[in-house]
Image 1 (cartoon, rainbow, N blue to C red):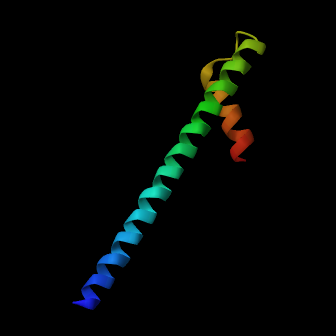
Image 2 (image 1 turned 120 degrees about the vertical axis):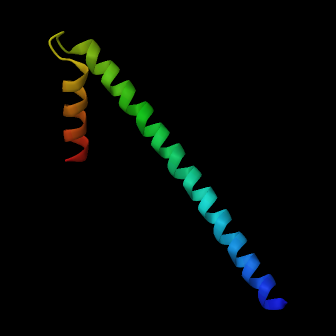
Length: 66
C-alpha cells in the first residue's frame, strides 16, 4: 500500500512538472511568434514594395536561425 502511494505521488509530481513546463514552452513560443510578426510588419514599412512577405520571412529566419 505504501509503495503504491509513493508511486502515485511521484507520477502526480512528474505530470504536474510536465504540464507546467509545456505551458511555459507554449507561452514562450507565442511571444516569439508575436515578436516575429511585429518585426516583419515594421520591416514592411521601411523596405521598398518589391519585397514581399516570403522575402522578409526568409531573411528573418536566416538571420536569427543561422
